[in-house]
Image (cartoon, rainbow over all chains, first blue to last red; front, side, top):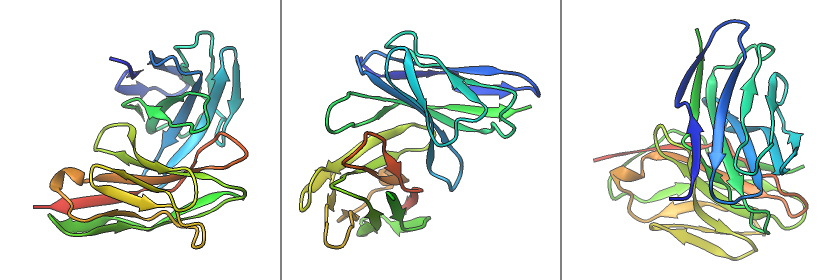
Length: 113
Length: 112
């Protein structure tokens, strides 16, 4: 089955720790995205990548980093510089065609210990 | 600039009631419009879309019509079910770039 796999489903971070959220897709999509979802705030774009080895900051990139070494993979690192990391993180991917329909993973819920 | 405004929730309905979730937008050019749905504990999935004025998107009994004159894309369903309980997001893709602009989401709870 084609789709987007995010792991882990739940993640806990200690003070001063970096954590990495995994996102893998087998849809052969060129573009991938990371969103943060907080209650009552909708989706906010963290980073996006339209092609391998290239990515751009979204609206709330501070305290986060990404890499795009393979087409299938777009991991997100939440660094210790992100002071309020508790949120639901969603990864998405899309073709580069005109409609840009985004397909989402099931999400990772990150909490701070 | 580009923006999407959705009616605030939560919306609570009884089974078989009529549903409307309002969505209005501001955009330059000719955006495409989308409704996504998020079931509890899951990611989002596309519900329907419309790419030009007067297009009607439809799926699973839901409909929305792209109204350029009122800059709206309201979501409707004639008879909701308990299984429709979810959060609904309106989004637009501006004509001049690829990034989606999201509304804040509207939570719907349908009681039996």
